[in-house]
Length: 462
Image (tube, rainbow, N blue to C red; front, side, top):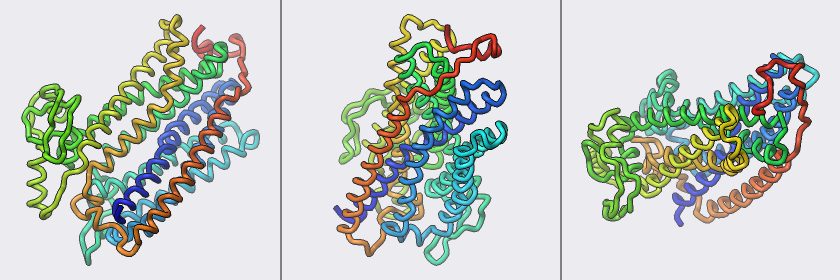
């Protein structure tokens, strides 16, 4: 394997590892803040115990996210020095702001939250976890600002073979950020909601009378269900935006080789990338045009026409990303999203109405085994986002093959790739062990009697 492939594999491995922890950090922090806020407003000790229980799991996840993310910054100087040289002036600004305005803020107030129980006032302590939640999502914003430039460059000029920033506001208001950021935040909330729902289901299967986990289950399914619909809506907005900003990514995700009007949506396709055709297809006529134009008509450019257009615009070359990988990654992501909506809806019916009381254990088992699904959806969604712009590392400006370090030998990259993979595997094992250990522990379940609390604070279902 050559240097380019090894460098891509190394960054891909560390990115996937790191991204396993990020969505849960974004979503679970918000849910913990909500739980503690309810405790402050009601005085119900159950919510305090709830915030502490989920907070312990949050800390393990947050720590692993920090450890696995630090390495990525070194890649830019090690394997991607030409990328750093080309756009370090632009990429460095949001990364620096992410550290200064988000990560440091998040870490500082997380420390206050950990050690501030019984030392800070209730309201002040609750404020610290809200700051952690807001700072975590602000961190995601700055990272996506940097990534969005790679997807759709704005606010720059080319000078001396480098991209240099001339308009910071244009960088912040990049239209790609406007569709990518809400989608990412909503995906984090889905992950947090499902995480709370699944672990609560485990405890309810062991102890069906636990009011703490009944309430946690209700909070989790509510968050997961609402956020899953938001993910679908913002994903729809992204598809419409891609038709204008990155039509090749959209065509590749659908394995649409020829321009069509109206364009079908392929449920299944046997893809022959070598010859640029699908040998077998199962399609819904006009559905892709409906997704993009909100009507069963409208032209979607095909891969062949876009390849010719890009060759004329950017020069001779292969501008087609890995179609098979993108096609199936998108469908795995979408299928996982549909499953999440279905299970969250069943959980909500059980929690709010009791309609499925006879199927209670079946629903709880389904919720428990849904725990890996948002991680699958997040990972494959990120694969679509990043691989869809290939062969570009900065769309329209710099190709991947131009961004790799020219003096780092393949053997060195291979050694570090193996080292990172082994170390990250050990970290994953440690994370799973600690998560499992703390998740199955039973916290103090302070079940305040109904006469000592408002009716609205009654147990989840009776």
